Length: 380
Image (cartoon, rainbow, N blue to C red; front, side):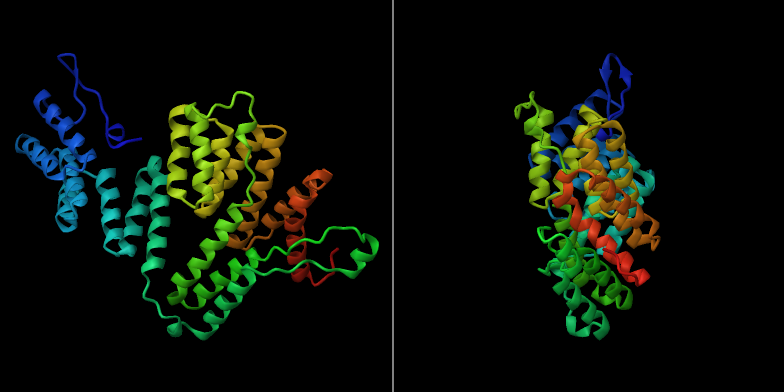
């Protein structure tokens, strides 16, 4: 949804739809100004918005437009002052959103995150956009970090080093008893990402100064796990048409996710769910996966449950597999290992279908090993 659409309101006056101003003349100026913004003709846009403000000094849309023009021109301090004026008149989403972006661009990530949280609290329809911004700010902070690993607590550094080695570990499960009973049983690479993720989080708890370093590893693990999520290949549909907007968006989403461009993927998902079909199972499944990535686990579980209940066959299978990932993460967050058992129950049910063995078995085995470590009882 674009800048204009988010703030559209209809007022009938002489059969003219007035959207942002109190007069036809100013509405024409506003339309010209926003066109200038879109074409990056920022000085012209600012001049046109200022003409509106002469007669409507408290028009927050003209103020926000002015601020946007100043932002695009790199005049961030002036832009922030304008957005502050807008907020003094009325709380509004565009001012909060742009202030978050300004703080992010100036490296004040703490305040950038605070404004994103405020947007999530006050404007639920912009939740996905705010979460995406938070992710981008985290990535920027990692790239721009001046943290010196030598300053990190030695125990935290040890955990990070162990996590770094563990997340890429190339080891297969070996069990003499199983090999003897089932000599032809395939060997599977161990799933070590979950343990590595926990080590990174333990390091942050020990020493918050290592957050940037640990978060980089966590995001790498998230991306790796996200690549394991299951999605329906829409090109297999009989009516697949890449020229159709819905199909085009879905193809783009998969490309964005593969290239770790989660911001664009999130926007494309929202476009499907808000303008095309709010019940599209593919889009809901995609949304659940991104919610997992952004650690909104409850929303991820809700999305996968919707797909599982509404879909059938392969959609149910994919959604249940993805939901098990969410339950596994929920167990980490809450410390409630009932969620781990829920994930295990899903895997056990899936393993009744021999065709799912190679996909599901490594993750089922990872949970079994984890439970074994808690109970100190051999599980095969």
